[in-house]
Length: 168
Image (cartoon, rainbow, N blue to C red; front, side):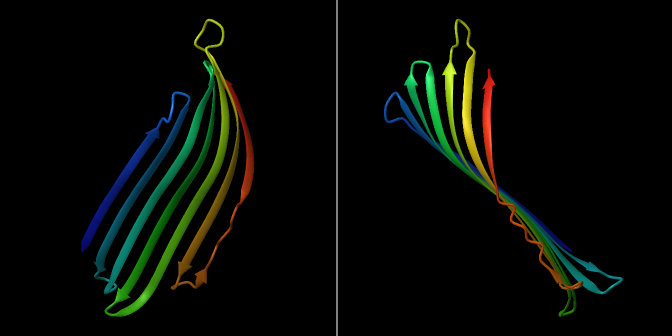
C-alpha cells in the first residue's frame, strides 16, 4: 500500500502608489492539495488507485483614488477558480476493471466600483456605496467506465447586479 499527500499554498500582493492620490494593487492566491492512495484488496485480488485534487486560485486588480480628503473611489476586477477532482482506478493484474472520475469546477469573474465617504460629522463613521457585476460558471463532469459514462455539465451563467450600501 502507498499513500502520498502534498500541499501548496502561495500568495502575494503588490502595491504601487504613483502619487498621494492613487494606489494600484495586484494580489493573488493559489492553494493546491493532492492526495494519492494505492492499495491491494486481497479478497478481490485487485489494486485500487484513488486520487484527490483540490485547487483554489484567485487574483484581484484594483485602483483606488482619493477624490477629496474624505472621499475615495475604487475600481476592482476579480477572478477566482475552485476545482475539485476525484478519481479511482481498479485493476486486476494488468486488466482495467473500472475507472471513475468526478470534476466539480466553479469560476467567478467580478467587476466592482465603490465610493466611500469617510469621517461623517465628528465621528469616525463612513458610508460606502457600490455596484458589482458577477458572472458565475459551474461545471460538473462525472465519468464511470464501470457503470457507463455520463456528463453532467451545466453552465450557470448568471449576471448579478449587486448594489451594496452600508454604514460603518
